[in-house]
Length: 208
Ligand SMILES: [Mg+2]
Image 1 (tube, helix red, strand yellow):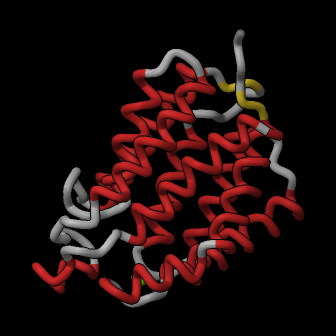
Image 2 (cartoon, rainbow, N blue to C red):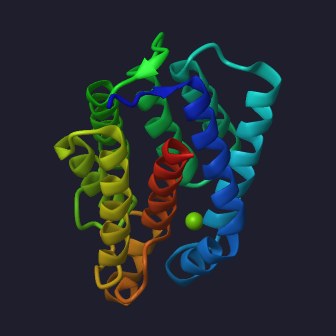
């Protein structure tokens, strides 16, 4: 069986992610209030709403252009660290998928690796710093190790969930939470949490 992701599939993913950011807004606000400035849930919900509006208005021609439109909207509408970091993620993911109608596992994995590298470069975050990278890296590793898109996205979502939970005991070394030092331990990272929802939405979009 050879499953590929097409334009409609990427669009479905973005709709599901926007829905998840709306449904989990309060949870993300609570997590960010504990160790940050409390704006992550509201910012991501507003940014993804704007992104979906933009996709309704413009209808980009291919998955690369679609993800670039989402990236540019998040960069221009979301403040704090989340806008530039998610913008960087979608921009580099999209750059690897331009002019492709059907995205196979190899192309998708390669695009995700470029995206995670770019996010790490932009935020200077490494594994264990208690950031979105702690969900992102294991998810992309799992995708690369897999043998099909379906199994890969299911494994990526599970790895992102485990990475998200593993941020709880960590002391933050990047971002606003790092100002708290040792007091940041015992709290789940909000960026790793929204990143888990990103992969959960991706797996759900492929299955639906
Ligand atoms: Mg914040």
